[in-house]
Image: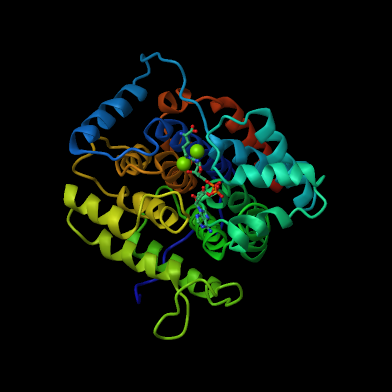
Length: 367
Ligand code: F2R
Ligand code: MG
Ligand code: MG
C-alpha cells in the first residue's frame, strides 16, 4: 500500500480530547445497546428497511420506549476503565478481579460461552495465576473470540499519546481471557484504530484509504513478532499476515460500488462472526465506509451511519457496532453523536462519567 500519509493533529486541544474520550465510550455503548437485539441474525433487504426505521425512531427525541440494554461488551469495558482509573500502575490481578466480580454480579449479559469457564477458574483459584485459566482454553490454543477487542477502548484512550505502552497494556489486558494470537492481535488492531481516530481532526475529513494504509503499516510491525504464531498458515513469503491481509481486503472493498451484493461480499470476505479475525477488520471497514454516503442508509450523520451499517451486516451485531462505534466516536467526539440516540441506551450517563474519570486520571483534574 503506497498511499500518502494520513494527516493527524500534532496537538489535541483539551476540550477536543475530552470530547473524544466521551465520544469513544459513548459510541461503543450505543453500538452495543442498539446492535444487541439483532445479534446472531441474518439480515435481508427487508430487514435493512426495518433497521432504518429503528434508528429513525431511536433518534427521534419524542420517542419513548424502554431503554436498550447493554451486554457483556459494555460490562467488560467498564472494568477496563476502572482498572485504569483506580490504580496508578496497571495491576492485571485487579483487572481479573473486576471482570469476575462484574460477571458474577450480572451473569446474564450475554457473555461468550467459553469465557465463563475462565471466570469460574479465576475465582476458584483465588486469582493465584491470573493468566493460567485463559491459556488453558480450547485445549491450550486460547480463545480467538472478539471479547478482547470489544472492551479495549479505554486502553487506547488512556495511552493515546504512548503507543508502545498502549500495545503492552492492551496485550496484557487481553491475555487475561484471550491468549490465541488472533484474539490478541484483534484487540491490538482495534486499539490502534481508536488511537489513530483520536489523532484525526474531527473538523477535517479522513481519507479512508490513508487511514487503512496507516493501520496496515502498524499491523506489519505487530504481526512481525513471530512467537505463538504456529497455528496461523504460513504465507508464501514466510511471514504471517492475518490482519494485514484483512486490511488489504478492507482497502479493496472500499473502492467498490455499493449495493446489496457488496454487503454479501463484505460478509464473505471480512466476516461478521464472533471471532476477532472475522469482526475487528469488519468494524474498521464499517467506520471507513460510513465516512461517505451509503445509498441504502438515510442519514447525514456519520456516527449513526457507522453503527447502522454495522448492524445491517448481521451476525455479531452488538460487538461489530460497538467496535465501529468506538472508532467513530473517537474521531467525531461527543458532538458527532445524536443525544436522543444516546439517551435510549442503558447506562448512558454512567458511561459519560466513566469517560470523564478516565480523562481526569490521564490528563489531571485541571485540564
Ligand atoms: N456470546 C455472545 N453471543 C451469543 C448469544 C448471546 C445471547 N444473545 C444471550 O443474550 O445469551 N456474545 C458475546 O460473545 C462475544 C465475545 O466472546 P468472547 O468474550 O470472545 O468469548 P469466548 O467464549 O472466549 O469466545 C467466543 C466463541 O468463539 C469461539 N472460539 C474462540 N476461540 C476458539 C478456539 N480457539 N477454537 C474454537 N472456537 C473458538 C467459541 O465458539 C467461543 O464460544 C461477543 O459477540 C459478545 O457480544
Ligand atoms: Mg455482547
Ligand atoms: Mg456480540
